[in-house]
Length: 148
Image 1 (cartoon, rainbow, N blue to C red):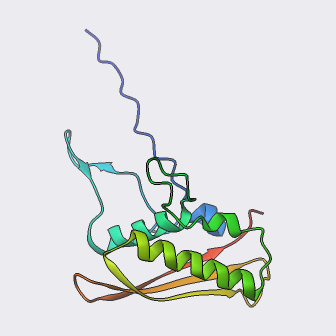
Image 2: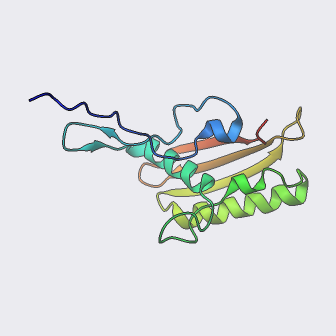
């Protein structure tokens, strides 16, 4: 009896940082679970799991996640809005509310949304937070850019 070839696993359709910044996804981008052995999946843990959760919260549009219609910040919806102080302030508020509501493992210290000094089409987003379990301080920085 001939062995049946097994198809390689497919990645989950999660938007990564490459979609967000027009660059190669970095090591902190959410990854699909990998096989730990033949019966288990390997999942992220600790600080990496928190960073992946934050990225998922930022990239998920409200209404996109099944059974959780209020989940997410939907920052991609802000790509083609004016890059002015009002829009950046509203985006910071949306991000802050979504993160505070959906990531209980951290205390959010600051959300900064600023215009890029060299390119008016780019918006820099920086989150500063403290991990409650360890007290460690960490941050996440993303660049919101239109597709080119």
